[in-house]
Amino acid sequence: MNPTHIPDRRGRFGSYGGIFVPETLMPAVEELAVAYDEAHADAAFLAEFEHLLRTYAGRPTPLTFARRLTADLGGAKIYLKREDLAHTGAHKINNALGQALLARRMGKSRIVAETGAGQHGVASATVAALLGLACVVYMGTEDMRRQRINVFRMRLLGAEVRPVDAGSRTLKDAINEAIRDWVTNVADTHYLLGSALGPHPYPVMVRDFQSVIGKEAREQILQAEGELPDLCIACVGGGSNAIGLFHAFRNDPVELLGVEAGGMGIEGGQHAARFADPERGRLGVLHGTQTYVLQTRDGQIALTHSVSAGLDYAAIGPEHAYLREIGRAGYTYATDDEALDAFQRLSRLEGIMPALESAHAVAEVIKRAPDMPPESLVIVNISGRGDKDIFTVAEVLDIDLGGEE
Ligand SMILES: *Cc1c(COP(=O)(O)O)cnc(C)c1O
Image (tube, protein in one colour):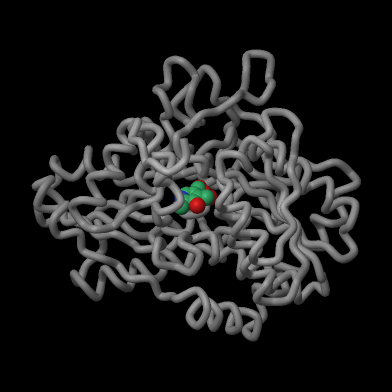
């Protein structure tokens, strides 16, 4: 693999990625690709981005040695990359900051975003407030019901949350509406997409903005241990926190492992594991990119399920499809139950409550670490904090919190 040529100028990672959009959207996508190329080559733009990551988002985030988890599992030394400590509680702020700066540079005064669990909506509303941009967040009504607190948070930050009552009333439908808004208002509007998905240049742009995770982690592990890790693990929804961690290690002899949402198990189809289900996970096009998409036998987008809303999406970022095909990264899944278990275990052993998304990565290290020699090193990306998930956890574990009836 020659990473300098990946993706090519049309955003293709081998046979994945590209630009699959209607003609009406083409000018917007092309304008963005040109603007991103210029910004990416502009030292002043990059300097401002890095300045805000440091002084606003709280970077660098620490790399924490998980002493008690390591002892408990009795194998590899486990380090946690602490994106849960970034401003707004997850890695999403890295990308949101980068794209908001780009929007301002392009002369746009308004951003639109989609959100599922609300994390990306909150990050978008946050950076819009920071830079004085108008912000509209599209959210499925089902997700709004499940994530009332994040809806309120976005409104407090000055964003307008627009309910989407179409389809399954979740993330996929919110993305459709955000794209529609972008086409209609492209003169003053930037679409701030939240993961390494969508038409070129989004997958490469989001990867670049998130690659600070791996850059820091690589330096930090060399500082702490004097050597590279054997294994890096991250959960994969659209794939932005995973590609953000993996990218800095792409040319190193380091195993890269992504963890998808296995939901209730692969058999019944109640999951979001695009790679693990050969029956439903097939090559397709969703939201402007060609990649693995969970679909029905006749090619309709399949309904997905995960206890973690952030992993609950039918398509995976195209670069992951490519890394898997060339054998550079491996992919597995964790079920809802395994993630819930990992959530509780990390909370009790380390005093770190991971997001349910991140708990999927923790579940995998729980499986892998005991069989690894004690001198081996693993980095697990804690993509976000779990505070947002405590009500979900209580509901699933059937714990009565009192208060409301
Ligand atoms: C959104 C989110 C994810 C999933 O998105 P990716 O693009 O796959 O990283 C994972 N963890 C957290 C905490 C999130 O908010």
